[in-house]
Length: 378
Image 1 (cartoon, rainbow, N blue to C red):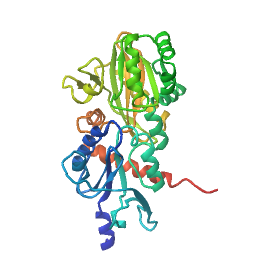
Image 2 (image 1 turned 180 degrees about the vertical axis):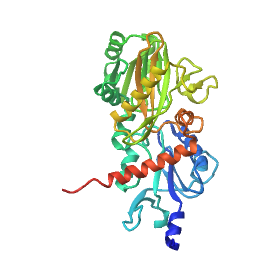
Image 3 (image 1 turned 90 degrees about the vertical axis):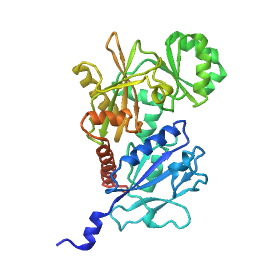
Image 4 (image 1 turned 45 degrees about the vertical axis):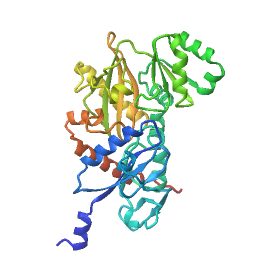
């Protein structure tokens, strides 16, 4: 006979803290992703705890943080900080708790699902907070998040692991400000044109410019430098096709079918990603089976190279004429709306959107449990 207390425990919903917004240039995209995730979660299985972060870095809890951040609420709830509580007696014993008046242990969450894109969310900073709080969380850890955000370091790691990356150069903002002519001359002589100029630490193609000649270079470098202290300049792969592949798992990741993006603009910039109705997502990608298998293999290798966990989308550039394949980048918190490439690729691979969310939460709990097996004292 099942005891009444055990039955209540079995029926208890998992409290999931969905964190969204953030200080990066991808704030609005984060709101769209969070809205989609919360709408798709099984309300019989999960209790959703929405937590918003304003573009100024203020944390919001209570009321409707999503509505507040989208401008639908006149008075925003205020959260001045966070504190950590530990309840060793419970099965899920750690929690991140808002430091607001009236906060109780019952306000704790069992797992955090960060839907934060870009710096101060996808770069290891928030992940470090979760580690300090000893809270299970969806997605990559501190190191993988940091490496995945910094495109320059990411490409260095990929190269060490034998992954094909396009020729590129890295400059500090100070180098460019001190001697712009020297920087531009080096780009012209070593990479040539066209090339892409990007802030090293940003996503959603924010701050990226395709440069067709020397006269355009100065403005492109200024644009990238306005977003980050580190600038990545990359050779343009000739007649490139944009191929993307989703990865799911912890130590034994799996890869989805690849998809192809056909932007409605010259390249897959911010406008093409989110506003241009001409942009097409083609799933599966119309490529030979052998090439699709190669994409999946490289996606898993890229995932393991940065020691990723939970989820990632790996992006590739395929040279149309030569068939040469380059790993472009790994996104540790990819766009997560129902029409984003990451979940759509899994849907095409047999994992529907709500089940994908379930799996990610379970992977977070499994990873946290595995980490607890490690000794912290000699």
